[in-house]
Amino acid sequence: MEMVAADIGGTHARFAIATRGEEGRIALSHVAKLKVAEYASLQAAFEAYRAGLGRPVPDDAVVALAAPTNVELITLANSPWSIRPALVAGQIGLKSARFINDFSAVSHAISECSSDLLEAVAGPRKALPAEGAVTVVGPGTGLGVGLLLTGRHPRVVPTEGGHIDFAPVDHLEERILAQLRRRFGRVSVERLVSGPGLSNIHAALAAIEGRASSSLDDKALWTAALENADALAREAFDRWCLMLGSVTGDLALAQGADAVVLAGGMLPRVRHLLAGSGFHARFKAKGRFEKRMADIPILHIVHPEPGLLGAAAVFFNEALGREER
Image (cartoon, rainbow, N blue to C red; front, side, top):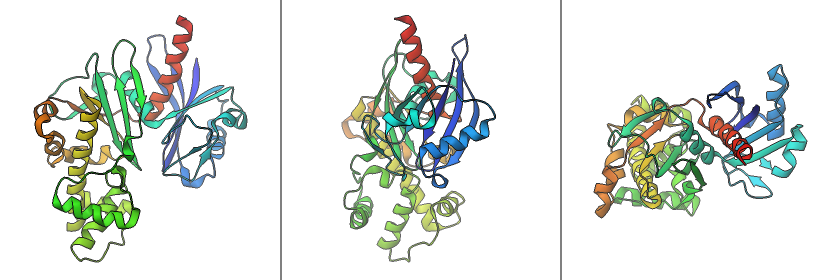
């Protein structure tokens, strides 16, 4: 049995053909990463993927999207594409196409991963609970949030946790929030804790300190911050780490997490720096719940394509469920 797995974010559209062997492991092949900005629609991107395959595509697909998917018309918060799920299979010549939230896919992927694909970031060095709640947080083009309930039959709860209100922790963050309210009105956590969030923090700090705003684009600003080539960019990154800790801790506390898994496109670039930042101190700083927060292991999924793996897991697990019935 094989299927097409797709993972559509604000920057890239990823596709793969997935199979599940007799031992239960999912294998991804023919993986392609296309730039969303270069295609007018999901259909156009899929056709480009099909054209480059050199073989027929399977009949069924599961598509992970950075948006709620239980609607008639899907609009992506960080992409110009609009998608009508009921029409897609016919448009691209498939028997079926199912749509799921992207961090639901990442959460499903975590339940498929062996321990060597989950590396410790902070907190006690413990594995995922055999039965419990796992908060999944991923800064990328936006901020993805999911909830995995482990057990014999793992369950995933889709969320839009990246769009909750940002809550400042200290006086400087109150001033940063005031600056961003002038631009955005309401300020969600993904305005700060995401790839573009570094630029927003940097601009707010420049305004607070009376400096000229930077002309660097997001990519150049991240490079300057991580290479310590610009003092204000590094200050913005240090604040980004603090905010990531606060937001991740808030989400874990709200979801009753027994463990946290970090994912998202930014993590491979910053994971090695989190231990030396204020990330974990902020994660734990929840007043009367500080001891509970200190007992939560924080891991990072290092599978190269968790969205594709999770989309495939949804398909194969549902197929297995049908067979068992």
